[in-house]
Length: 133
Image (cartoon, rainbow, N blue to C red; front, top):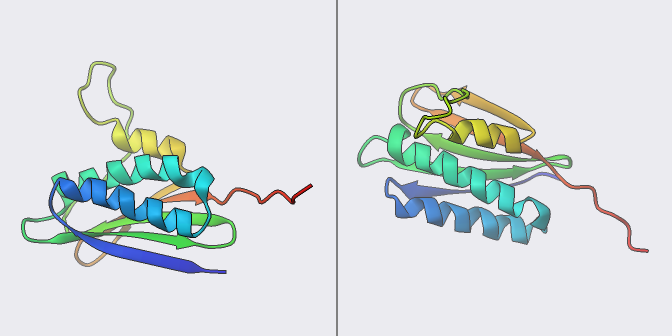
Protein backbone atom coordinates (compact mmCIF):
# COMPACT_ATOMS: atom_id res chain seq x y z
CA UNK A 1 0.00 0.00 0.00
CA UNK A 2 1.35 3.43 -0.93
CA UNK A 3 -0.53 6.68 -0.28
CA UNK A 4 0.54 10.25 -0.91
CA UNK A 5 -0.93 13.70 -0.27
CA UNK A 6 0.61 17.13 -0.63
CA UNK A 7 -0.40 20.77 -0.45
CA UNK A 8 1.25 24.09 -1.27
CA UNK A 9 1.31 26.98 1.18
CA UNK A 10 2.18 30.67 0.69
CA UNK A 11 5.12 32.24 2.52
CA UNK A 12 3.08 33.48 5.50
CA UNK A 13 3.22 32.75 9.21
CA UNK A 14 -0.39 31.53 9.08
CA UNK A 15 0.78 28.76 6.76
CA UNK A 16 2.47 27.03 9.70
CA UNK A 17 -0.90 26.43 11.39
CA UNK A 18 -2.48 25.52 8.06
CA UNK A 19 0.24 22.92 7.48
CA UNK A 20 -0.48 21.41 10.94
CA UNK A 21 -4.17 21.22 10.05
CA UNK A 22 -3.32 19.58 6.72
CA UNK A 23 -1.16 16.82 8.21
CA UNK A 24 -3.66 16.22 11.00
CA UNK A 25 -6.46 15.73 8.47
CA UNK A 26 -4.39 13.34 6.38
CA UNK A 27 -3.27 11.28 9.37
CA UNK A 28 -6.87 11.03 10.64
CA UNK A 29 -7.98 9.92 7.16
CA UNK A 30 -5.22 7.29 7.15
CA UNK A 31 -6.17 6.25 10.71
CA UNK A 32 -2.68 6.95 12.07
CA UNK A 33 -3.83 8.65 15.27
CA UNK A 34 -0.74 7.65 17.34
CA UNK A 35 1.51 9.68 15.01
CA UNK A 36 -0.52 12.90 14.96
CA UNK A 37 1.09 14.79 17.85
CA UNK A 38 4.70 14.06 16.85
CA UNK A 39 4.13 14.85 13.18
CA UNK A 40 2.20 18.04 14.02
CA UNK A 41 5.13 19.24 16.11
CA UNK A 42 7.60 18.33 13.38
CA UNK A 43 5.68 19.99 10.55
CA UNK A 44 5.45 23.12 12.70
CA UNK A 45 9.25 23.27 12.86
CA UNK A 46 9.87 22.42 9.21
CA UNK A 47 7.19 24.82 7.94
CA UNK A 48 8.52 27.60 10.18
CA UNK A 49 12.01 27.02 8.80
CA UNK A 50 10.64 27.14 5.26
CA UNK A 51 8.84 30.43 5.92
CA UNK A 52 11.78 32.05 7.73
CA UNK A 53 14.75 30.68 5.80
CA UNK A 54 13.79 28.66 2.76
CA UNK A 55 11.12 30.40 0.72
CA UNK A 56 12.08 33.47 -1.29
CA UNK A 57 9.45 36.27 -1.29
CA UNK A 58 6.50 35.52 -3.55
CA UNK A 59 7.11 31.77 -3.54
CA UNK A 60 5.36 28.85 -1.87
CA UNK A 61 6.49 25.77 0.01
CA UNK A 62 5.01 22.30 -0.23
CA UNK A 63 4.13 19.90 2.59
CA UNK A 64 3.67 16.25 1.72
CA UNK A 65 2.97 12.96 3.45
CA UNK A 66 3.76 9.56 1.96
CA UNK A 67 2.63 6.35 3.56
CA UNK A 68 4.10 2.95 2.93
CA UNK A 69 3.52 -0.28 4.82
CA UNK A 70 6.09 0.50 7.51
CA UNK A 71 6.84 4.25 7.29
CA UNK A 72 5.18 7.62 6.97
CA UNK A 73 7.40 10.27 5.43
CA UNK A 74 6.80 13.96 6.12
CA UNK A 75 8.34 16.22 3.48
CA UNK A 76 8.67 20.00 3.30
CA UNK A 77 10.03 21.33 0.02
CA UNK A 78 11.05 24.91 -0.59
CA UNK A 79 12.90 26.77 -3.33
CA UNK A 80 15.46 28.48 -1.12
CA UNK A 81 19.19 27.86 -0.96
CA UNK A 82 21.07 26.35 1.93
CA UNK A 83 21.50 23.01 3.59
CA UNK A 84 19.76 22.62 6.97
CA UNK A 85 21.86 20.75 9.49
CA UNK A 86 21.02 19.20 12.84
CA UNK A 87 23.27 20.64 15.51
CA UNK A 88 23.33 20.59 19.26
CA UNK A 89 22.73 24.18 20.45
CA UNK A 90 24.48 25.79 23.37
CA UNK A 91 22.50 25.74 26.61
CA UNK A 92 22.05 29.52 26.55
CA UNK A 93 21.17 29.76 22.83
CA UNK A 94 17.81 31.34 21.99
CA UNK A 95 17.35 29.33 18.80
CA UNK A 96 18.72 26.38 16.88
CA UNK A 97 16.95 23.54 18.68
CA UNK A 98 14.22 22.79 16.16
CA UNK A 99 15.93 20.31 13.85
CA UNK A 100 17.64 18.71 16.84
CA UNK A 101 14.22 18.06 18.43
CA UNK A 102 12.49 16.80 15.29
CA UNK A 103 15.43 14.54 14.52
CA UNK A 104 14.99 13.04 17.98
CA UNK A 105 11.24 12.44 17.45
CA UNK A 106 11.58 10.92 13.98
CA UNK A 107 12.94 7.53 12.98
CA UNK A 108 14.79 9.06 10.03
CA UNK A 109 15.91 12.50 8.84
CA UNK A 110 17.37 13.78 5.62
CA UNK A 111 17.64 16.54 3.06
CA UNK A 112 17.27 15.97 -0.68
CA UNK A 113 18.85 18.69 -2.84
CA UNK A 114 17.16 19.78 -6.07
CA UNK A 115 18.32 21.99 -8.92
CA UNK A 116 16.29 24.70 -7.19
CA UNK A 117 15.72 24.28 -3.46
CA UNK A 118 15.56 21.21 -1.27
CA UNK A 119 13.23 18.81 0.51
CA UNK A 120 13.67 18.26 4.24
CA UNK A 121 12.11 14.95 5.24
CA UNK A 122 11.40 12.95 8.37
CA UNK A 123 10.34 9.30 8.53
CA UNK A 124 8.12 7.77 11.22
CA UNK A 125 7.42 4.09 11.78
CA UNK A 126 3.78 3.11 11.31
CA UNK A 127 2.54 1.67 14.59
CA UNK A 128 1.74 -2.03 14.53
CA UNK A 129 -1.96 -2.81 14.45
CA UNK A 130 -2.99 -4.99 17.34
CA UNK A 131 -5.59 -7.65 16.58
CA UNK A 132 -8.88 -7.31 18.45
CA UNK A 133 -9.22 -9.76 21.40
